[in-house]
Length: 395
Ligand code: V47
Ligand code: SF4
Image: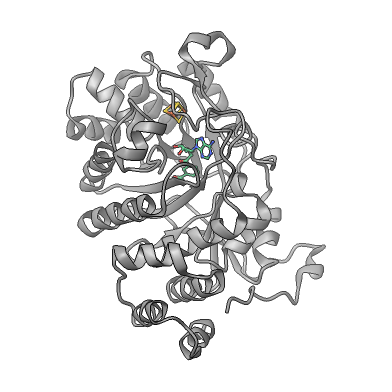
């Protein structure tokens, strides 16, 4: 597809010189600096950002928009840590209000999906002492033995740092052990904001930004892939976001192991930061776009629709996003407990229609972006109403 929108931006004689220089760089496939990243956050209008991010998105993927069929397992909602943004965890002191599944109970959940065409199980939850290295190694082994075709994407450096420290083993030993037990990839959670000025206030006590990055590096060095998130829209300033993006980009230069960047919008219900207002949809779209522009070495940018809602997810597809996560059912409570208004359940047909409704080309992918079903020519019986829509104009 031709980069019509970015050409329009470049033809605009009234464009401020700083923004013009960045647009020219993006058009030439060059990397922007941290100063330019900050300039985008502070000054760039939404339409301009959309034009640049959409140019990159279409250079990389055309209209292709990915989703997968997955389900979530949250072994517990009790946690030793007390992140102030977290609506989900029941403090260890109020343990009786939460759930703590045993290995057998988790396997029962896995088995519930035996006759369903899901390709991935995403496991993440609170941190508790009984969930240690032997527990998770046994869990991964059992899942892989039970259903070898199911990709195990599990835990974050928050859990790994805790369990390896407790077991007195290095990150290298620990991640090798997890790989051997059947772990196939690592989701992007627990990143929050890396800079200690913010991290210490919102996620004190859990792994630091450097430790989070180091565990991903060790995992990548084993030839494995992972994702990266950024929790934004709370107490951080724009420069903290740029710092976060810069650290992700630098590690990706070293390892190439990240697949997808997933900005996570802070949701404000039922947590200690409820007094903060949430970012606007405009700010969410600007943030997706800047993530896409900054992370030139990441293949994918994902909008996690259960958190931002279906409409913003559709809009995001014109602001750099090429992936809208999965056809998850109601097995994740992280966002519904934090105030996301959506019931996180969408069938494959609904997801495909959602993507097509904004003129994009839906592809069901596996965790590693292998194509499972290309929906370009698959038509559902009542779909005529969606024909004729085109991609949102971004000028
Ligand atoms: O680490 C917790 C975030 C993350 C809130 O890799 C919140 O494919 C907003 O990482 N408001 C877990 N965010 C979810 C996650 C994820 C989700 C989907 C796909 C992938 C992937 C990863 O959720 C946590 C934390 O950063 N979170 N509470 C809140 N109130
Ligand atoms: Fe625990 Fe994760 Fe919630 Fe922090 S965000 S309290 S580590 S479950």
